[in-house]
Length: 584
Image 1 (cartoon, rainbow, N blue to C red):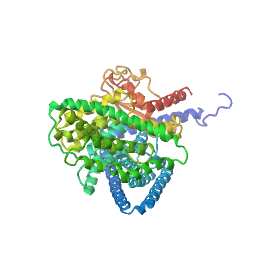
Image 2: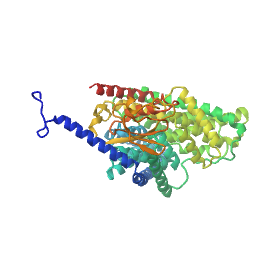
Image 3: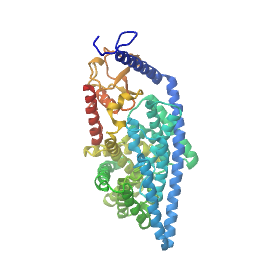
Image 4: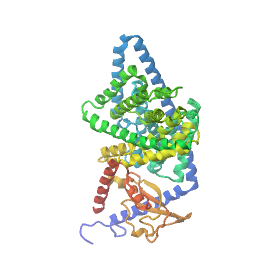
C-alpha cells in the first residue's frame, strides 16, 4: 500500500472504492424500484387519480383567471365610455394607465418567470432546465394578466392559462410528495388542463400538451393528461358554460370542387405564419432589446400607451380579440379593406405587446388573426372568382387551423382545435389539407416555430445558471424515465447494447419486445419496434435523452433535431460540456 492512501479499517480496501460501489448498488436498486413502479398497473391508476386532481386544481385556477379577465375587460369598456362622456377624466385615465404599468413591472421584477406567455417556461420546466416557484408564479401571473387586460394590451388568456395550470400541477406534485421525474408528468397534465379550460376544448388541451410541451407519448402520460384535461373542462363548464370560447357554425359544408381554394389558403396561411413569426422575433430581439434602462417599465410603457389610445380610437384591437370575433360573426359581409385593416392593426398591437415581454399570451390573438386571414382570403376570392359568400364561415375556421399550424408547427393540434370549434367532423378533410400545406410551407422557409424559438431564447439566457449546468447533474439522486421505440431501419437496429455509443448519463433499464420484458445486458440486441425505457438524471436530462432518441429513431426521422436554431445552439453547448465531463 502506498504511503498516504487511507484504507477502510475493517476490510483494508480503499474507502473511495467502497463508497463508489455502494453508490452504484444504490443507484441500481433505485433504478429497479423505479422501473417496477413505472410499469405497475397500480402506478397507472395513481397517475389517473393524480391527473384528475391536477385537472381540478388547474381548472379552478384558470376558471378564476377567466372570470377576472372578463371583469377587467368589462371595466375597461366602462372606463373608456365614462372618459368619452367626460373628457376631463383623461388625466385620471393616463395616471391609471401609468399606475397599472408600474404595478405589472414591479410584479415582473418580483417573479421574472411570469413574463411573456408562460409556455416557454413550462417547456423548460418539463425539460428539467427550470424550476419555477409555483406559488409565486401563480400569484404573479394571475394579477399581471388581469392588469394587462385592464390596460387593454392585445394579449390572450391561453398562454398564461397553460402556465397557471402547469404550476397547479406542480403544486399537487409537491403536496403529495412526488419526485422530480413524476413531477414533470404532472406539470404536463397541468398544462393540458390549462389549455382545456382556456378554450373549453379538452382534446385540444391533450394534443397541445403532448405535441408542444412534452413531445413524448406513453400510456401513463396519455391517460393522466386526458384525465386532467377532461376534469378541468368539466369544472370550467359547470361555472362558465359548455360553449367553446370560439364557436363557428357552417351554413353549408364546403364541396370538393372548391378544394383548390383550400390548397391556395394553405399556402397563404403558411406564408402569413412565417411573416407572423419573423415580425414578432424581430420586434422582441431587435427593437425592444435596445431598451436597457428602467426595464421592464420602459418597455411596458410602449404597449400600455398604444393600448390606451386604441381603447378610444379602435377598441376592437384591444384585449384578446373578442370584439373582432363578434364583428366578423355578424350577418353580412365585411368590406375587404376593413378586414385587412383589422388584421394589420391586431397584428401590430399584438406584436408590440408581446415584444415588450408583457405577461400575456398570443394564442387567442393568433386564432383571431387566423379567422381574419381566412376572411380576407374568402373575401378576395368572392370578389375575384365569385366564391359564394355562404362559405365564408368555413374559411374562418380553415384560417385558424392554417395559421396555427404554420406559427406553432403543431398541425395535429390545429386539426383538433378546428373540430372542437365547430363540433363537426364534416370539415376534417379540408382542415387537414390546409394544416398540412401550411405546416410544410412554413417549414420550407426555415423559419423557427414560434414557441421553440422562445424556448431557445430562454435556454440561452439560463444556460450558465446552476439549473442548466450539465456538470451539476450528478448532484441529483432523482431519475427520469423515457420510453422510446426503435424505429424501422434505425441506426441501432441489430446492434447490441454494448456496441452502441450511448450519450453520457443515459442508461437502458428495460427492453420490451412483443409484450415481453427483457432485462438488458451488454449482449442484448435491439430490434425494430422494441420499446426501450431509458433512465436519465432528472435534473438535467434533456440533452442526453434528445440524442438517445435521435439514435433510436427510424430512417424517416433519424436525422431529427430540434426545429429551433436557438435550441440547437443551446444543446450544442450542453454537448460540449458533456464531452468535457467525460474527459475529466
